[in-house]
Length: 185
Ligand SMILES: [Mg+2]
Image (cartoon, rainbow, N blue to C red):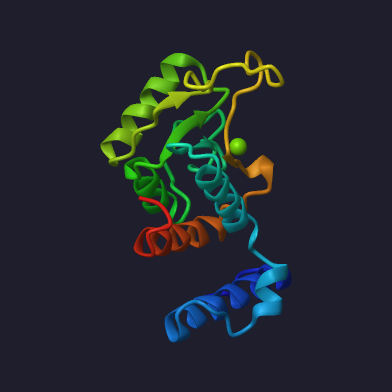
């Protein structure tokens, strides 16, 4: 399973597999806690922090910004769109799209007519984005102006350090477990 990967990625996947094994065997604590703390924890930490803030501040939900190209789908650049999803992207987005306490914002530099095609494709796969590139639901405050910076709580973008080959599966498992434990709904 990991033979085709480089050494550092192979190590990451092995660590992640060890962690999943730990979840299955003893209800959450990892077999390799010091290793899982070093690798592959950032997307879980981002969501944990956002949900904690939501609870602390009595917000109804969090906003999750999601890029398309080289994040949800493999970028085709000038070629025809082939809709190649990264592993577990569809599953994780499906959960987030239906979660009451998550609002999905599509984050893309694509032109509007092409965005419509993407939204249609996502919808055909059961995934609905609430907004595109902007968050209409946040108001400026004394300290914060969102006129030029879209407000969000978690960003999923290859350029934000999201590793599309491994982080979608980590996120999917986190979401399934979070809903099961009642951390969010
Ligand atoms: Mg991208």
